[in-house]
Length: 423
Image (tube, rainbow, N blue to C red; front, side, top):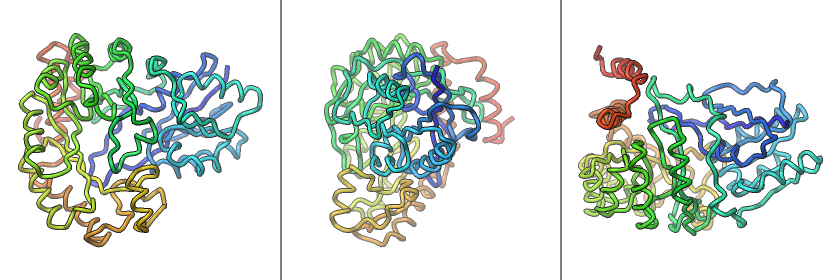
């Protein structure tokens, strides 16, 4: 039996954001692709310290975000000094592949299903390859199985005693090619839905009524989306996701299936956005606006007007970031060509630090406006309180259909009391 230590490096939350931690998705999906003779021990460094003395035959470092890569390299260095080989994988590894090669014994690029047997076989034979590149050789989507959530320490993933969501996905790839996004490079521009029965079976198997469907966007195939939601209705799960198709029939089915809230990009002050948010709310679906600041059309006056607009349209939450030119995005290609990238220190790529030259202001002024956005949006009601409003809402939905877990009651009441002054 091979002892495989799987490490998820720590990373900082956005400046201004309430700190909470969700169980990571990449490591549990990867673990499901490992052969049966591999024993996995997982450490999420965001929630517990890494024990560098625990015996291991090989270490895997799974990195989702650019902000994790330098810490991942540090961790690799410690294990390699002990003579333990290290393999890197995950989204951030794919974005920083050549650099990761320098710091590891092997680099895995692409989707893991059906691929790890060869990697482990090579390791057993003492012939681990430097690079396993499957970026353009994706496995059949039917091979994607149920993630290995058993490797998680579930008790760590709660917010002040309130159960957080579990992550699951119903598709891969994205037919859109948004300016700041690397998904077209990572997963291709072809929308690849999993067989609906497999997605439903995985959702049903999760011992948690609250899910986060992490697909890049559910709004890619309207008929598939409706079929998925119809099959989800009997599960009585409560879930959040990225955008849902702006269609009354789709939104109605989503609400019936338990849609709790969406992460919706808010990219301008148009009537379309105003009505888009209203339609979600009309179906009982809350909205967390994801707001990117610093695009070339953003002047100082525009950003201030933008914040006023966000308050006016009644977003339930807002998450502000500044444009960050991650490698293999259109943003990186354009800003690099124009000589406007000011830092390639990956520890600065937190999405709350300005690392490029904005078109209409200094980097320092955009940084100030980023903090202004957080402060202004949450001036009347703190982010933590808005979060608890969302959590109350999901508990009310659960109580209405009989899925509320009694064990959460005392914990939730205690958390609410600490944060509202109520006893």
